[in-house]
Length: 155
Image (cartoon, one colour):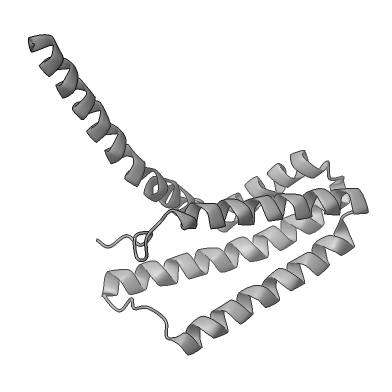
């Protein structure tokens, strides 16, 4: 009987520990990205793309420029959100603001696609598109399991 109780306590302890780690992983990754400069983020992304797509020198330079622009914009957005959160002025966007943001995001994606098509050859472009689709699917699948409002952290 004592052995059964000890085993049950061990399982409960392991389960509680596993659940605690699950929630902190995403926040830690976000904090690590916040500490990187825009140049570092762009360099890392360019190197990953070079490995995945076998880019030549001129392609690397052009993609580095694009990645740097994107990283700078992302970094500015992160800083703005962080400042709003700390000031206590963070609030959900209205329907109009959300529509405006979605349009801007889609315009940016279309622009990125056109730039990448002009830089990459057909084989590289096909690989890049496949990778983009995979990342989008991962993001959608990750959000499927969450309940409304669960993905947001409130501190």
